[in-house]
Length: 154
Image (cartoon, rainbow, N blue to C red; front, side):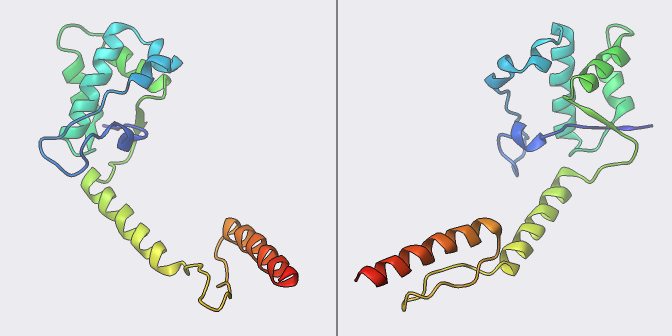
């Protein structure tokens, strides 16, 4: 059977949790060589696939997309292959999570990682808390140098 997945789908979402679903059409596509090289019928097929992807909550069967874009001809498979080759859609052998479920999963992961990460902060007595990332470590190193230099000169 096969499924269609749209890479970077969040980028094309206007409202993430509303019905009816709205899809953004970015003017930045005009500067995207992959999109610009598409024919007008391929661009129309892409828009149709995006709408179907939204309606299906991210579980778009390849056969359903093929039927929808092949209404007036037999070149639907060529259209899907062109969109896949351009990287604007991807074929998947396994059924993807629904968009709603994958959003919930991302929220849970984000919440778990946010609560697991220690917060770096400067305490009232000028002591710095331990860093949790390389960027934080560099910021702490710079802050310690500034504090040490300030205390030595003062």
